[in-house]
Image (cartoon, rainbow, N blue to C red; front, side, top):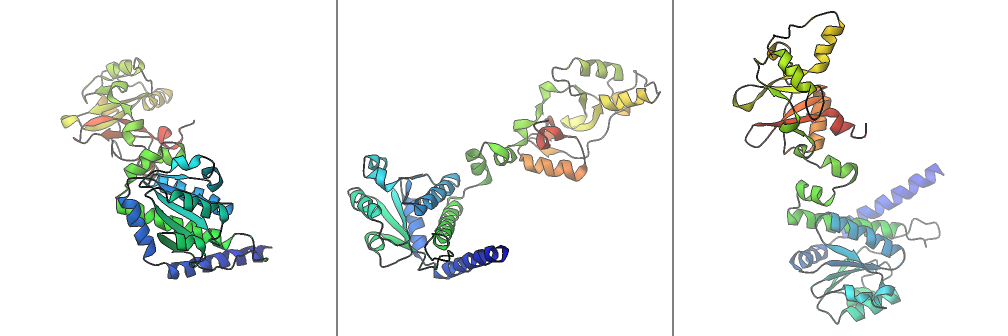
Length: 319
């Protein structure tokens, strides 16, 4: 079974290589239609092709191209109202002869839309009815019966990926745009900015280097958010050190008696790394791991101290 599974994957990989060589200017023509369109991209298909259409539509939408899916049967019973002037219809059918899809294409021609066909038969009824054809070619299905949509649906999905990513690049779709469309989950969190998760200045005790230790510890105990941490700021609003209540506690536990009149600069630790508030959280995570530190000062675009970001908030948000 393992060898058969490996053989199936090799068959589908070989089919994608064939598809890559078959690809022609039609994908560029379709991309130009979409880029110049004022409407949305509508993916249509029946059965497995319809499921591939849903995947392609989702990739388009998440990379900056507005898109929906439309079931051809539902479209013929009222849902055609979802299609508007200027839309681009992409109809998926390996055979190119799906009856419901052909009925939909004839109906949608009442509107000024562009129709594209993604099919395995460039001479099919669907291809002849379309303005542009993305031909995946006659591919042998990996199924031993040659019937189950496998290789053909893989090729359609890959063609959809190629189209979506070409459009993404042409639109100049940035990491910031991606973050705007993916606010949830681990992916969205990794695309958040440091400034979105940092502790702002009003939540952090801030002292000058010559502040007496007694006053600093008293202020830290009365802080609104008790982290046991304070920032020591020198000239030009630069953080010159971090005062950790935990470090003072360890001194006491070890039998030492810190002089409470000492300036905090005698007990602070220099920051090993800093980060911009505009940086992404995954960049902060890389710095935390690289320097093996628990917190970092955050600076604004004027290079002024703006807050602190904590390792636990970035890498272990649920603990």
